Amino acid sequence: MAIPDYQICMLPFLDFLGDSKEHSLREAEESLGKYFKLSDAERAELLPSGQQGIFKNRIGWARTYLKKACLIESPKRGVFKITGRGLKILSTNPIRIDGKFLEQFPEFMEFKDISKSTNGTTTALGLTAAIPAATTTPEEAIELAYQGLREQLAQELLSVILSCSPIFFEQLVVDLLVKMGYGGSRRDAGERIGQTGDGGIDGIIKEDRLGLDAIFIQAKRWQGSVGRPEIQKFVGALQGQRARKGVFITTSTYTAEAVDYASRIDTKVVLIDGKALSALMIDFDVGVSVSASYVVKRVDSDYFEEG
Image 1 (spheres, rainbow, N blue to C red):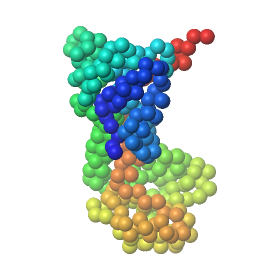
Image 2 (cartoon, helix red, strand yellow; image 1 turned 90 degrees about the horizontal axis):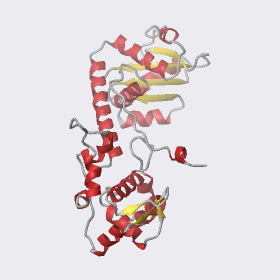
Image 3 (cartoon, rainbow, N blue to C red; image 1 turned 60 degrees about the vertical axis):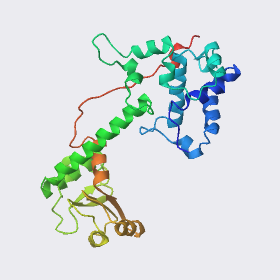
Image 4 (cartoon, rainbow, N blue to C red; image 1 turned 120 degrees about the vertical axis):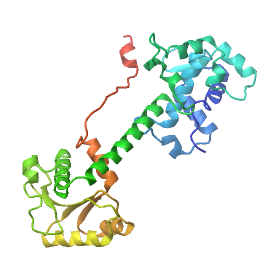
């Protein structure tokens, strides 16, 4: 089954603690993973940032909501147990426990009301109350919004690139490769762009600062998919230069035949399509600048350890 959202996790979480014993979040994750019959792959699935498991994140927020409603408590760091209120709720055999259900408890409403500052804006503490979708946790909402902004930026980048001249695009490619650690300085890396005299090669760049090897570049601003014939032409040009490595970069995509051909030849040819190109430009700050920066922090448990 699909990974349940954090609200669906609330009732099973509370039921797991129904034995009135102390349990860790890891124990709850294991128990609920079996309850929802999640596969190992689903259990291992990460948030877009790759910093935390999706299921673990949702279990954590189910715990937070239940704790804010005083249905569970934390007698000591890292463990939880059900409260008298929680046991009373379980005795009524609720069909579902979610945010709406928890609004009957004043402590939970106080937690939600923290979201409103004196000027009516939403604060970071109240992010949970400001999430538009009931199925997403705060971290998921932030990361999904970030991914959406990143995809929009990638599309805008490709549109701008297509409006530039071929020479500018070739230089853009060099700038990107230099930012990625190839070629030493921009001046050294770009000296030979467009000067090889070979129609199948747009430039050469050093593989490292010492110039121990060279990488030959083909940069094409295309609208349609690049097919196998174009890759074969590039490989032929590489062989004419006795080159062992090449990078073919395009603003469009590659056909399946082109990708298959590049994977089977002895010459090492890396294919970078428009999607990968824009992603690399964003990651290495080429043609983009920081508009805003947000830092998400968490409690440092080690700091509060008393010796």
